[in-house]
Image (cartoon, rainbow, N blue to C red; front, side, top):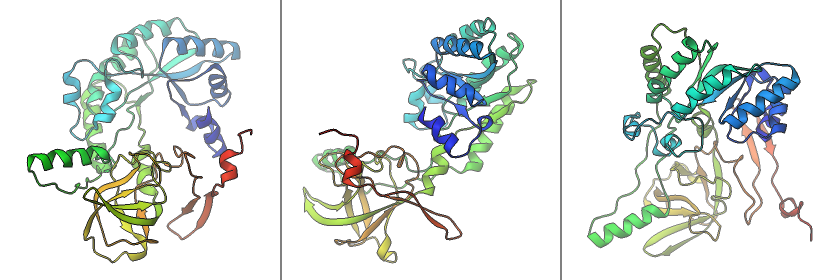
Length: 360
């Protein structure tokens, strides 16, 4: 329900909201109907029954979508686009809890024909590309056999922003194995983000091939991380530098408490010495007493010193929304646009903010 609340506070009206997620309690569904959201993407038969009853009491017919798990066979994962992440493909395993299986989707078509207060208008899936070819036969079946008014095709996200290389203690473990085998260790290589033009071309080509004579639906995508990721950066202050275990460790004042997905690789630079050359292979780690509190492993930086400011790029996604108060208050968030406009959009927390809901 928080996402609906935030969307409303941000000024989004119902026709610009699609309500997703595996957990939608009765009160959340009621609120979604009151806001007249464009679509509610349903994930279970219980949810369909619950939503139909709520819509019936409200005297409305609610447009919905079905989230489909497009997994059909073990070779499906191998048929995904080479740049599709394994983490994203995990949404398609047969034991995955998200969405309806292919067989369940057909059952849902029959189920929905008996529901007078729900209007099936969309099929939704994740990730995109090859899954379209799996989904389109269902889309055709819904339109032709069951005569649903199919208006939308939601292909989800999974677009690679270029920050998805693994980092953390796994790389250190691989270093140890290489050393035992007499293999020289190498630094972690950077990845490049997918070009949105290439993504669009891939999607449209597959969609046109699969559509045939079907009416062209409105295509919906969810490129949240692809857009938000590069829009944010995190400034960290170097507390100290130490050498231990054959590595140089740069200890900074923020880590996985601020950006919980630091297992993804991000670009770093020394903000107060931007012209300095990267000469040293280091591990940058956060302040937590937690072995996986990594900012960057085996990355090259200049000779950093206490007090230097390290800028971590591509931190716009899953940072503010996923940050925690584990051991430290959260830092402020500042909006800066291309015209030089600066505004604090989240205030710096204090220790009192951390414990304000506790009772001693």
